[in-house]
Structure formats: C-alpha cells, structure tokens
Length: 530
Image (tube, rainbow, N blue to C red; front, side, top):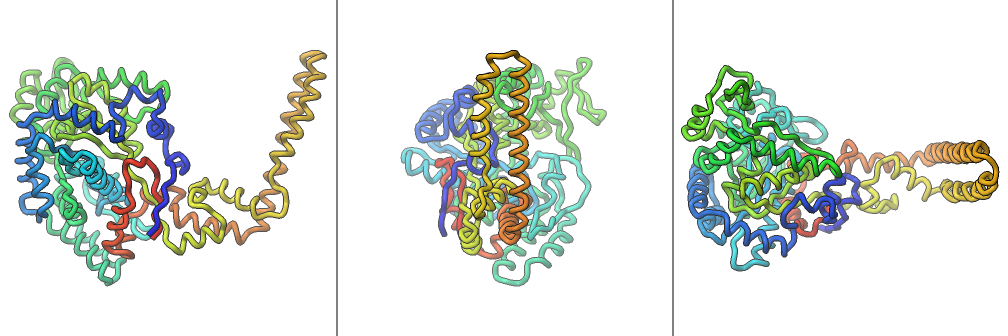
C-alpha cells in the first residue's frame, strides 16, 4: 500500500467555494465559525461544553439504546453510548442517504474520516472523549436518488412505489434485487461475505432504516461508530422549541435569506430556503407545511391547522414534523454534543448558508470539514501510468488536455505554438506604436489583423495536433482506455462505484487500508495504491 496526497484544487473536481474555504480566503470567512484545525477544535469544545445540557445527553442516550435494540452491539459501541452521558464527551458527525447497499464508494470515506478524526482528537485532547456518529437520512423522500448502486459498470436497481420518508420503506421486493446482484458475485470467500451482508441486511429487516443500520454496523462496529436515526419522538421533543419558532416566526427563512444575499456575491448558492422549512410526515407521505389565509396547510393533502392546533400538534406528535435541508443541520446540533460535521463539497456549500440562522437561535455553529476523497489505483495501473509518463496528478486532467499534453511531449515536432504566437505579438507591438501616431481607424485595423493572425496560428496548431494524435494513435488509445477505467464517465470513481467491487477483490483489508490512509485534518485528496 502506498499513499500520495494531492491538493484538492489540483484534481479539478472541486468547486471554487471549497477551494476558497480550504484556503481560508477572506471572502468566505464570515460564513463559518471555527476552522478544522487543532486550534479550531479547542475553541469549539469550549463553546459546545457551555451550551449542551445534561438533560439532552440523557434523552440522547435513552433514544440510542432503544434504536439499537435487536442489533449486535460491540463493546466499543456500548462504551461510546455510555460516554455520551458525560459532559466531557463530544461527537463528530457525518450524514448520508439510505442508498441501496451504501451507494457510492464515498460512503466509506465519510465514515472512516469521521472515525479517524475522533481518534486524532482523542490523542490531542486527552481530557475529552470523542464519539463518531453516522446520521442516517431516514426522513429524505427522494427515492430516485437512493434506489440503486453501480456494480461492475451496471446499475443494480430496486423498483417500488415512491412515497413518504425512505427510512420507513418496507424492504419488500429486495429479494429480487439480491438474486440479480448475487449472480454477478461468484462464490469466493469475499463474495460469500458480500451476499450475506446484503441478504441479512435487507431480507431480515422490515424497513430501510433498520437494514441500513445493520449494514453500516457490520462494517464499522469495531470502531465504535454510533448510528442515529433522527426520525424519533424523544429526540424530536428536544427540537420542539425550534419547530414552534419556525412555525410562528419563519426564523430560518429570514436568517438564511440574509446570508444568501452576502454569500452569492462570491459563490454559487446550493439551496434556497422556503418560508417554512418543515415537512409534515405521515406513514406514506412527507409534504411541505404552508401558511396560507391564516391557516397552516399540508401540501397535496386536505390537512389544515389553526395556529393553536399546529402548536398543540408539535407537542402531541413531534415525530410528524420533519426538518428540510435548511433545518436538518440545526436539528442535528440540538440533539448531539457535536463539534464537527464532515461532508462532501455540496453539503459543505449549503452548511455555509446557515451560520446566521444558528446564531439567531443561539446554537453553536459546528466546524465544517470537507471529507476525505480517495482515488484507488492498483499496482498494475500505476505501472501503466509510469509507462505512459503520466503522473498521479496528471491523471485527473481533462481527457482532451491530457492527450494533447502527452502527444506534444512524445512528438519530435514542435507542436507548441506559444513561442510563435508571442513572436507575432512582439511584431505587432511595433506596428501598434506606428498606429498610435496616425488615426484611430488604422489602429483598429492593426488590432483586427493581430487577432486574425493569432487565430490563424491557433487553428494551425489545432490541426497539427490533430494530425499528430492520429499518428500517435496507439498512445492516444492506451491513455483513453486507462483514464476511463480509473475515472469512470470522466468523474471521480468515488461517485460511481460501490464498495463491493473492491471488497470482492481485497476483502476486509480494503477497509483496513482505507482507514490507515485517511488523514482528515490534512485537507488533501488521497491517492491509494493497492
């Protein structure tokens, strides 16, 4: 195993928002609290310790005990749940949708980054305890985003009727998915494990939340990972004051709208708030709560409430109120003694819209940490890259740029016209000096001629390069084939492949290797050679 770290910006796959955040650019500083470094964590611990009540800890611990009933709980998990009662115990959290069989590879990277960060913080802050948490997005209702995973270039999909919070979905129908998937796996020792993990998860549990908990627990229980389901009455009771405030005052809409105005001067906005950022949740539906004509209405239903009725409903039936993407982060921070949220670039971008809202309701805004990203390459692939004289950084280049670069490097001809174009510009400088002494029309004619001739040279360079690519057809084909395997669909493989492809080949040592490679506070992209 060999690990190489590359700056995120050198991969070309990360947004300006994330690159500026990692670089602590002045324009983004107003939108986060403490930065993800040791000094930032020191400040965050102090902030959270002052604000998080013992009563909330006791409710959290009891809720977790209930959620884990019927599941195999490791000693480390039992210990971590008990530790959460103590005022010097904090969590580090990541969240993920209930994707079929974990979905894309980065599910593993999120969780292992979270586990490793807790271990690193334990070494640095010996008077505190740190517990890794995976927040299951059980209340999401976009089934199309989670009902499949990719295996060996093919889509393995679960087809069923949509409706309601996905965590409550019955696992009926997954027997057929299992049959299709298992036919692709063979009968090796690792294949047997994958089949058992899938069948025990989905065919022995009644709903998607329990099935996902089982699978994540089997993969990570030895590291003490706590898996939490926010669709829980006791936990939502802790959030009741915020829900009531939202219904009465539309606080999130006002605060987030203010932030967005400032943020969009420099960055792309990820999500926009609604006037009320809550859903009403039933067994088979999750619909927006609207305020119209003095009444609270549940969209696409006949359900309506007066103000008094809906506030009573919050007290009597807290589980029916489900936060949307704007309020869910706050819900998490209300019920957990949390220091840090680890997520991908898209998640980080919408969290950056929320700091003013957190301040408005007096809840500490957590540290935001861009999760580890990984590119796995085999020894064989590394050898091929070296043979083609492609560095690990260069393999992330846009394919056309990579081909041009390597064809130019491999050619005896001078295919780079930069010098020729510069010489042409120098010649026109003399003409421009003459032009300045005449009239404007002649100066414009000189500028137009310069643009025309530069364009002509650029077109000649493109034609020459195209001809040379044809001549170096073998090199071009080898580069295309290799890059397409490493970066499927010209995208990071972590967004395309499922962990089972690598587990089939490497078994549990794949997870061990990842855990050894991931350094969350280094804030760099990881290339893992296996």
